Length: 62
Image (cartoon, rainbow, N blue to C red; front, side, top):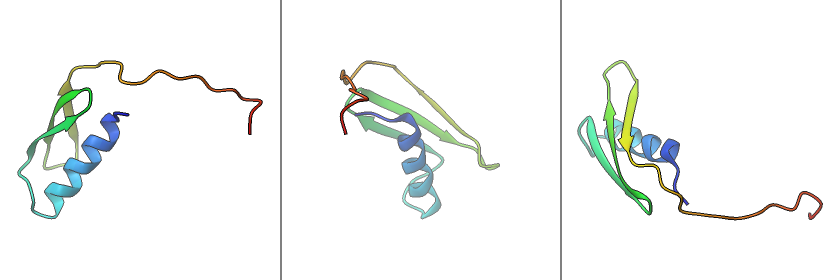
């Protein structure tokens, strides 16, 4: 599954430990996400939104 929040978090950590600059491209199953990290801690994400998973939940099942 894809997760934009996880993509931004991964980019942020990679940047904080000196592995990337402040602009990162994260490749996911749903496509590439462009992450921009601002000096004040804000993060911006751009990319497509596509369905990569379908499922159902049975709340009665444990």
